[in-house]
Image (tube, rainbow, N blue to C red; front, side, top):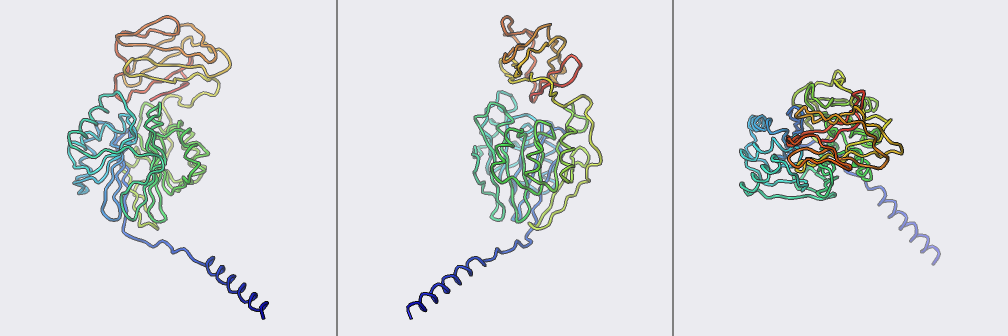
Length: 395
């Protein structure tokens, strides 16, 4: 009798365990519409999210000159208040346009990378936040931003202590039902690798850094598996964005590509189950006017650019000396060129090109000019070899 009771008890427990395993996940059903607007601001980023329950979030605003365009677009949509604004990082092509927005439209909360920048654009943005008494937050990696009860907004990267502006980028994964958006700011390949330790899969990818080859590695694209990729850049931009190898990687993965330079503002609408994209699929790869691929034959790169002291650091990370004879350092915004003298950069060594009132020379310092070179907001530096090929670029 005891054996029978034990057997019956085991059968009962096993039945209970089996019942627990059979618990089914409730399928996602279609809900109210969420719309994500990738606003055409030329060479820059600006994204508006309208949540299923009427909340609004603006992520970046393009350059300052695009700010009024963003304001007009918001007003055309009937957006008279923004629940949240996110400045992914302090580069001018992301935060400049936020200044007119801050001055014109009421904002409930402002999220910033916390990365301090010396530019006038960054200072104006902070002043506007302070004058309007807008709550200011610096999120951390792993934080969840409270936005809409039906939408999850997770911070996959935020680093106020980053040495580079792009590395500070706030990266957001926005999930509504079965449809997700990965909004990467200007996050580079090293950050992509870090983020891949978590779940980065997404239905829609906003490619990092306007389609530059400093972002969107093959490994990252394979991890994201985007059905759709949005490229936000200006037509005939001086950086050669998007770079052909990035477009090739996306096409090889079967991702449908949409570009603001071709379609203008792109709107993705979703009910959490299905989605539509209002733009026209990119019909061509924009070939850069100048070579844009970082050359594998040299390890020389621009490692620093100080806008205040006007010093640019260039390092040889390779194992052999490199002759810099007839190489050029270029300030893109001002279209100014420094021609290197006939010198060799030894392995592991750094030289500094100086300009401005305190320009100096001697030892490992080269004097360019006493005029100011790097005070242009968002000015990028390029290093080109004696053939005119792009070796390194730093925003």
